[in-house]
Length: 289
Image (cartoon, rainbow, N blue to C red; front, side, top):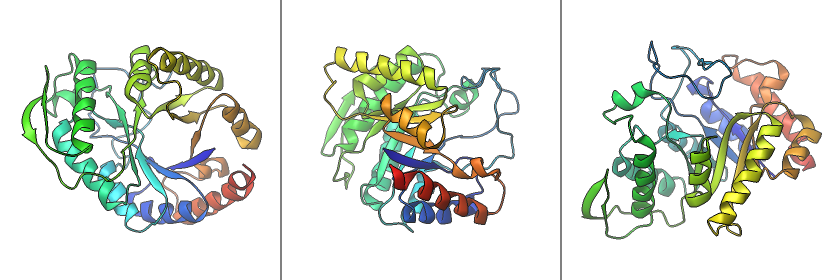
């Protein structure tokens, strides 16, 4: 079992010290969220809360996740990083390939790219990307990213993206894993077909179990049942050593957590209690797995 520390919604000036502490305590990875901006009004419901409302505000702190990874990688040596998840639909994949390749190389191949389509029409439209046909565009964008990141002189001629031969150097010396997010059937098929893993949002245990089972079915259908595949889980109703062992039994390989939440420490609180919570979690949970 891997354990990943999520730094979502914490003050940005705490990121480097949180990363150092997580590395010292045996966490495998740091997970970085993605939010481009907070629109005053949004024309779609947020898909991961019961009532469709956003659980953050206009003043909630966010950082560009790739910039944040570069900053934290510079002060650590072993811990890995991934986006959970980056909204690909509102981004140009050629420009993103340059950024991802740079982060992967400069971090010493310690970066994985968690990808999702995105849910907010405003994020698409105000960044110059159409909201319509977003799933098909993301499928092409993933192909573009993989093609460029694998290195060499490449070209692509699709319905949504088109370019002649180009090369970005240096290419990452190791495979950059793609972790696909989303709970819909389309998203699960995308993860099973092209992903190195699947990244959940907030889910209850029973829903998580059924989703993992469906992913196994889909991976078998695509002939990828024997390919290594990560299951990154944010489970909202199974905690503690027994709860995490139960998650492992249903196929979770990576538990994403914020240990200070269990200690009553808030996102905006000072970093000291958060570091104490990380150390306690490592002693009581990670060391016993």
